[in-house]
Image 1 (cartoon, rainbow, N blue to C red):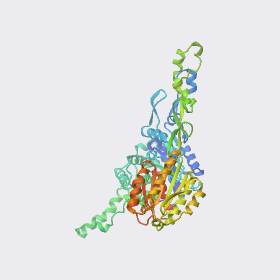
Image 2 (cartoon, helix red, strand yellow):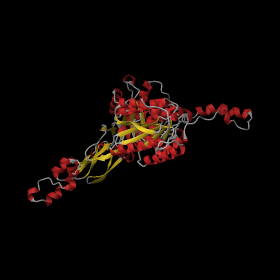
Image 3 (cartoon, helix red, strand yellow):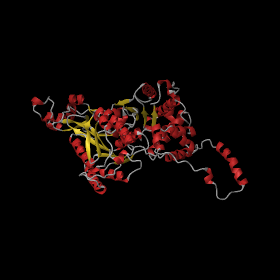
Length: 591
């Protein structure tokens, strides 16, 4: 099963959607990687048309927890004096589907509630005077806008049995569907009774191992998918084609390694040759045996070849280079750390508090907190106040905000003679690309250069891309390497950035060879010791640091500097400046 055209990709996406429509909760969900546009709209319209049980509920990006899980129905509670509960989106979706918008940026608490419901089919509610479990068995359509480097959280994608990528398709590739709704209903009724031969299960397990997929959920979800695909074709027993299609839909995107090439047949010859007649008879009978067993699993090589053909291009390139996929989702670039704030930022819930101490009063949450107590308080109140709303200071709820701190990237460039000989032109080009990325994210940049007998701040923290490029273009080269002074200046600037409420990240471009001491006198041993001492002082700040080895061959001194800084070491690749930029971005995102 090889991808031959865009229309075949659309057909595969339709097949995945049909399988999901048959048993949404059994398959967990469908990860749809596609930017907003007509193709995704058409796909979602098809999903709504094939939905068998209930209308899908959409979960917005910044959904409030009370809307997601449910809470007190305030109007009825205040009107009747008794507690009335309003169910949330997840409970309302029991037996149906929820659509998670911008899944790659979903809040952690939203993902946690979704994962809990996908695991158990229920929601445990213990909030606002309620303590009970409610049914919430649903499937998830996670809409991922497909930005480079951004993915939904692994905790969620591990529970989604299917993935489709519509990013490369146009509306002209979307052929008219031949899926019959009646066939979906019939498959829904009989898929659980479909038999899967042991040989197919064994081949499935071998494929997951070969692709480095160690999650048991992947095996369980794919085995269910095999049965559903067979039921859609009207079969009572799964066959090879069902297994191959399931591997493509459910396993290809989960690969963490490419299987090793099998040894050549010549290396496996027996040490003692057998008589020619004894070898001939079994070989002549083998094709007959295979023909008599149509339910045998396809060769492992064929399954792996099918999976590799549908591995996402970016992931495939990374695996071929021997890189492991990232263990967590991350954006295209780094972002500042988050901190709580009383008045600004993104609302992330409420908490008991006094608005007179700087918090922002959340009126609806305050009324919900007071509602269960109204009957008791009216009984205790005087006759003149029995018809009034009774609110006490203990009912006050303030909004919690989480504020994204600004980020500042400090480029610390070694412009000494030793580094000038080692492709400083490529290093400058990479820094310019990184500066442009920082500008597009509205982050600040600063530039420190060290050469001769001192380090100097050529560019204070700024968002001006023009100023940054001018400072980089005027970067001189040659002279000694005052590494200790450079690290010390970086530490001082990082402390200032932290005091201003931003998050600093230092990117050192150096070979780590120091030969100028702090007082400007030459001497390698003393210069190295002072550089290591200054690096340990920087490490105490617990700020992020990257050391990019700008020499043609990896230098142990650069590794030692990275360890002393508490940062990450990156060797200068043989690729161009864009390749270096991509490596730095990946390292910053993982940090």
